[in-house]
Structures are given as C-alpha cells and as structure tokens.
Image (cartoon, rainbow over all chains, first blue to last red; front, side, top):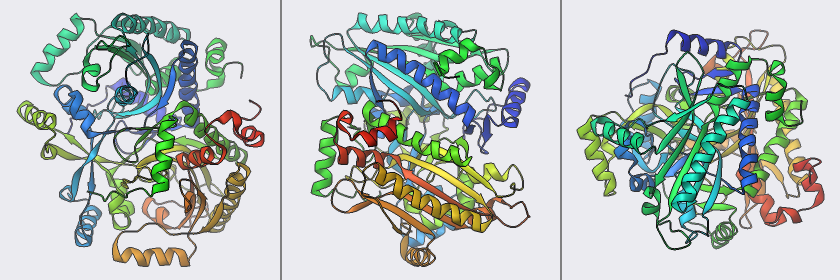
Length: 312
Length: 312
C-alpha cells in the first residue's frame, strides 16, 4: 500500500513530545491521532477567528460531512490528478455464511477484503468539493457571486507519515468564492495577504509563495509546472516539527474548472470562476503549541486575546 | 449493496421541507447531507451544553477523527455483530498505466473497484472505540476510574435511507466511563435520567426505554434478546419526522467486553468495566427544529437560554 514516509529525527522527537504531554493521542495508525481538550480548544478558537472574518465579509456558513458521492469525484477528474491520495468506501453485502467467514478471517487478522464491495461514497479529499454542486442547484449566481464559509471540515489524504504535521485525516478551514473571474481572483489574493497577517499576528513566522499540488505521475509534473506558471496556487508556510517549512494554508484559483462540471453561471449568464482557501487547522494548532509552548496559560497575551477574545 | 430504506410519506415531506428552508443540503447520496449555519449553531450549542455538564463532573476532554485502525475493529469483534453497518477504506497503489485505466473507467462511470486495495483503516462506527486503547495505554486506572468526554465525533453506519433522521454519517456526542463495575453502572443510569431531563428541558417529549442493537443475522436475534434481558442498553426516543419515535441517545453498559480486549484494569488490579453514552447530534437538532420551528429567533426563551446561555 501507500509508502510510509518515515519521520526525520526532529519530527520523531516532536511527535514523542506531543504524545508525552497528551496534545496528540496515538491510535496505532500513522497520521491518525486523537487530540486533547487543550488542543481542541485552540483549534476551535482558530476556526472561530476565521469565521468572524468571513461573517464580516457576509459569507454564508455551511457544513459538510467527510464523505462525498463517488459520482461527483468521478465528474471532477480527481482520479487523473490525485489517484494516490484518495480513500474509497467499501462495505459488506453478503449473506450469513459470508459474514461468518469474513469475521473468522478478521479475528485471525487475515485478508477479508474479498467480502467488501465498492459503495457509492468516497472520503472527502478537499473541503470545497461538496459546495459547488450545492450552489449550482440554486440556479444562476447573484450579481457579484457568492462567498461560502465551509467551516472546519475533515478531509482525507492517503499519506501515512511519521511527521506529526502530516495527517491522513485533518480539518481544512474552508472558504469558497464563486462569481465573475475578477471578483474571484481579487478575493483569493485578498485572503492570501490576510492569512499571512493573521498567522503573523498569532506569532507564527508565516510566508506566502507560489505553489503546486502533488500531482500523480509523469504527466503530473507538467500539470504542476503549468499551475506554478499561471500562479493558480499559493501556500502560506511556517515551521512546525523541524527546520523545513510546512504549508498551513493554500489559496487556489480554479478558473472555470468546477463551474463547467457543475454548470455554475454568473448573474450575466457567463461561465463562473471559483477559488477556495483552506487553513490546515491541526497544522496551525501544532505550530502555535510549538511556538508558544505546551501550556496555553503561558502564551503571549496578544495571541490569547485574538483567539479567546475578551476571555482569559 | 446495502438495501435503500425508502422514506415514509411523512419522512419524505420532512426532508423536502428541511431542504427547502436550507437546514439540510442534499448531496446526491441518501443520509449524507450538508447543514446550514443555523443548523450548525444549534448542533454545536447542544454539544457545548453536554460538555458543561461533563466538565462539572470532572470529565477529561478528548477528540478523535472518524477513522479507526482496522486491527482494533478486528479485535473488538465488530464484524460478528454489525458486518452490514461497517465502511472500510480502500485506496490505490498501482502504477501509471493502472491509474490511467482506473481514471478512464471512472470518467465513464464504470466499475473501477479492482484498482482499489484494502487499507489498514476503517470508518469509525462508534465514537467510544478509540478511547479504550488510549486509556489502556496509560496503565492501571486511578481509584474510581476515569470519565471521558469524547465530544461530538463523526461516525459511519451503512444504512442508506430516505428518512432525514437516519444518516450514514453523523455526530455522536460521546461520554465514556471506565472503572469499577458499580461506579460504571451508576454513571450510566445517572446519565440516562439526566438525558431525559435535559431533552425535556429543551421542549422534546423524551422517553427512556430498554433497547437492543441492530445485530446482524439469526444469531443476532439472540444477542439482542440477551442485551434486553440484561438491560445493557437504554435509548431515549423522541418524534422527529413522523409519528414513530426515533432514538436520539443511547446508554450502553459493556461489562468487561472492552476491558478484556484492551487490558483495562481498575486501581485494585481487577478487570475494569465500561459504559458509554451517545447523543445523536443531528437527530436532536432536527427534533428541535421540528418542535420549535425553522426560525430560531421564535424559539421559546427558556430553550434559547439553555442553548445560548446568557446570549440572545
């Protein structure tokens, strides 16, 4: 199966320390961790901080579960770009004899995959995907398009790793803009700059840069080069568990990709454009604990003030 | 695949109404819905209300993602009781030619399951499962055991249905107690009674009763009868989308089942017992909207006071 990426010595030490103080709770699977109440509190405070900024812009709040109809995934071409990152849902539909055989093998930790069949669902790989068909179902966009706050949404990436900052399942703090091309591009650039300010304001040494997605295979290298050349993707990076920077937010301009798939039209009846942004909530929370220490009570007052508002 | 349970006329009408006012957002898959900001706000306020009660008891807060190592599932015997409800995670590990063939079939909406292999992960079927090994890893329990607040955790049940109250993916508001048998039983009964009071206080006509799990197959009928006879499971029910009551919370006494699997010992070195409770957050939120109306501003003041505290 997917290659396990071993941790660097720094990453291994960071994971040990996070588990030792209880901020992360190992489950036995790499990149699948429980979190302590202190971790959750910081993560949710960051989520709310972004929500308040979106509210001030007039963003509409929605929330989607971590599953997507398989057909949507097939329609948007995810399997061309990222077949290696996807998780699909299988389930049992056999009779009692097959259930007994399946259970017997499972108890012995032997292979019981033959009893599982593909369902109509996959794990959600990006928090923005369910939003496009939901907006398209409303008909033509209003003048100026729409701004959607998708909240903190669990997404899955099949990237087992020993790096505590590389999770297989994590929360993307998602915002989406759909509308006229210039409106969408401006919004994407506005949020990229806002994000740098926001994260620096929380004491993180954040830097924005042009980036590309981890496209699959040889043809993926061309896709990545094209994406960089057109500046379709920016990332904001900080240091988390080692000297090399880790992306904690991304800002993506899709041009007409999703609009063509789902039939999204501007008020004028043109093909709409879309952009999305996602903050990696667990990565940002880890960066905050690594930067300010494991005891939240000892964090700088201005950082606390932003996260907890007027509360101590 | 799993048999689709058609909605009753009342359930169908309820789903249409919920979609019309935007509280639920259809995705194309039954039992997989997006939710509006108003829905999320109520759901999260209920989640926080339960957290405050747990805090007063001294419960320790943790949070786990909606995936479980497959090996844990194999160890606890889930496939004996509920093989029909489980979702397993498959993924791609092929080369570029296989990726191209997979993508081509997917684009044509043909079968591409042969390119997917079983991973070491399954969808979490019950919010309490990751908690037992996490507590066991700490060693022997303290005197009086532990009380864990698992928060609102996404769980998966392969039950596609047209009933808006029967979701395939939903939040269980989870609490777990592990300790001496009498401590655990008392806690389970205390919370069962508390839950009835809590839900009645929110204006829901809640009733508690002995219940059983939907065990699979012929032998499952015996397991269910035994569970009822020993009063191992209680449910609290309310009406949601039709006259028949729906379970919105369950209270489960596992005796030594999980303790034996994961090696949980009391302070005295005896095999521990465990119990858990789960509120169905989406069901309770739906019940509140069905009972008090779709406009939260018009809800009874005492219901608002409990959910929003001193805020309007």
